[in-house]
Image (cartoon, rainbow, N blue to C red; front, side, top):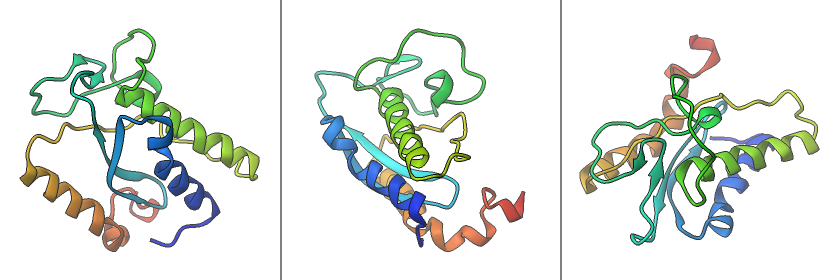
Length: 149
């Protein structure tokens, strides 16, 4: 995927995530023209992964997280928890938006939500990695491509 100036910002902010969140390890990711796909591995089993629903144990379905950074039908709940997926995504989106404003992309705005999913097996991890890796090749038929809306 060829990146414009704003895409480069999104890419660099993603790559810098572990500097700000040492418990976040980056796996496969791609910056698309109007969205991002990525796998974040949360390291440190002594601090469980936190989402909107609380501590994750063995969840096999997608989960919702936080208001401005989650699925649109989320309930009201408390402040972001440090080192949680919602906190990491919130900081990522904020960093990209602040930089976008500084370089003149004043109209840039994130979708108000995102989708997260707990990857529970090596098979699922490899399938999702493949989906992310080959997503740019399918951009012409992607449902997120504005020409297909």
